Image (cartoon, rainbow, N blue to C red; front, side, top):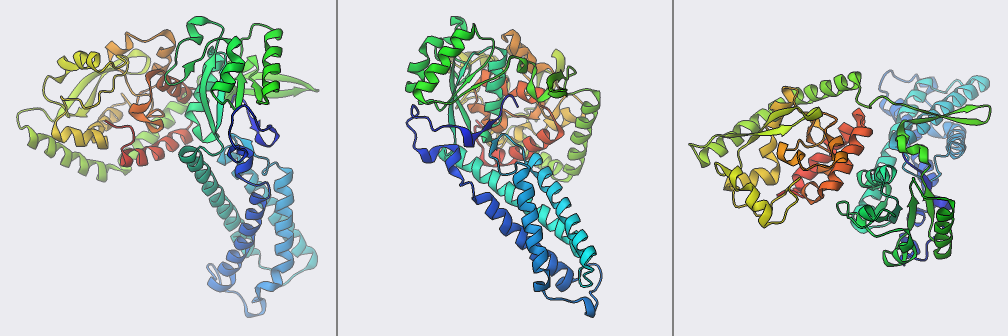
Length: 498
């Protein structure tokens, strides 16, 4: 992450005009999660007892060792107390924006492990004959599992509240639209669950500060700071390097302090992509080490390729059946026209290939494309034409359901595409790219990607590129799996598809 914010320490801004209830720190009372965890741990203990003494999964309980649940009451209290203290000291209940589910799961698992060891030590010292060590196995599994489910539900609830009702979402003004500023924008756009909504940016360079970047507006230079904060109801100001001098920073601090708007500053070193910056301690002196190799190195590319092939093979009975039905539907509409449509696209590092799709348009539709782009005033770098007259009746259904892209799986099998990655552009679109846009060609293109699950056709081109660069810089096998899972409801709900 480029920066983290402990939202409990942020003052409520008065310049935003939002009610205090809309601030992130007010969505969830500080006592709610500890109380929920205590209840969950107690239920986990009850479930573990039931599995051991009632269900008796692995081996039966001897009659002499069959004890009521009340016998375990002291252990329940010790177990719950130890976990609550452990989690509090480990910072689990500090509301840190951006902490991942896996980080919280690690804290949970470590706490459960230590608590189980404590229970084993107590049972050994007290020589409790009725104490079942097998139950400890059940207890560890049920506790970790149930606490994980609670947190998954919590993450889903907050994502829903932020996306649908705007609760806990902070309107962010970014100062500086250079490399670091764009990196901040990419994170905020890609990880909307963090609750940041960038309203635009200020930059002293008039060629940048006065130009929109997708839906992110260029709001002028730093001298417009106070007026912009008031007009845009800004909740948070993020300052990114390079900045012109200390006096300008102090002026920004003064304006934010006067308007009671929190300010965050991104250190200059984070221009090198903070997720790959590590801090070492040299007797109190912080040393920063940077990973200079690309995220998708040879080993990761092999892992990504294996995941693609494995998922395609597992899903083959489903997609092959749908493939045949769609082919019949396309052919039945026009017997003489081809079923498939092949289009030249640009792949990894600018290598061209033929992308295969089901035909969804009339024959020779490409010759009308430029005219429609001009008529609808679309961005020629990534045009998305609404009410396209070239689309056939069957094609309308295919595009709404994204079934026209099903033959892309053949490109994946050929190694020309991946299941997840930036959408491959056409050669004429690439000719219109600026230098920074070319970064999205640094990896294998994908059938689906981060911009598709973030709005598909509703996402402007520059914003799409920011999301693609974020994906390339932060790739992991878990990010691919997350995007694939998020693609399913997007396709079913047909969000942003036309």
